[in-house]
Length: 323
Image (cartoon, rainbow, N blue to C red; front, side, top):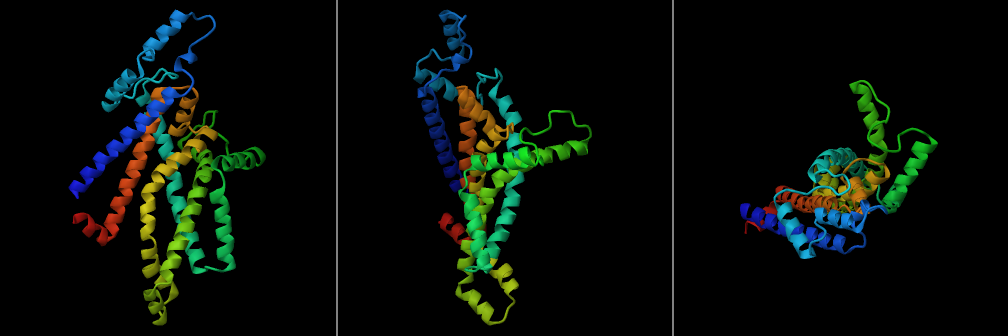
């Protein structure tokens, strides 16, 4: 087990280094220059060159790369070009906001997806199965940005039920309870937009897995013995059908963060996704690289969590890894 973990961690570090190196190369080859943020008609060429020198942009690309990789390896993400603040401070403020959004999405979509998947599997090939499956396919295929814009237009602008942006109201809210209610109101729309596609995918996955289990011989034998259908489903079928779902739990982490990028930007939610998109527009290299690091780390950790969870519930995986 320890040997396996060490190999996985070393391989994960290699993947993260590759992702960050490719990101570094791409953003430096892309058109645009971070120093353009400070360039004005009244500023002379010498001042512009001094600004580039302070940013380290006057060095050859390979020197910039090795300087960056040395600082990054020590945990120094640098200073944001646009905010003039350490990137670590910006991330410390943004990461809890992103985790708050994704946490509000993960469990509800999982519960609803499992319930809908069970209903479709038990009622498979019926009108109920067809109707729910068609509706879920519609929501799963819907672009996230379009769903977010429609939600803002309908529930915020037309009906006025929920706020359309930010984490809290601009006007001061007194009282702990009032602040909690205000935060929940701002959280509902972005969480709903982010949860719908994931819930739809979970439901369709559970439907497929449970339908396959219900056709197994041991399920038919249990039915032939007159065991109640509810007991067969919850005690025997569902337990085996949800095993493949465990592998998806780790993969949800990077996909949730990826979906949160568009959702945070459209709802002006001050999370990692929003600051990364703004950094791309402003050519803020340190923030872009830090955001790429978080995304790569989420993918690697998601894969590792999936493997460990599956290893914990399936004895055959334990034997295979031990040998």
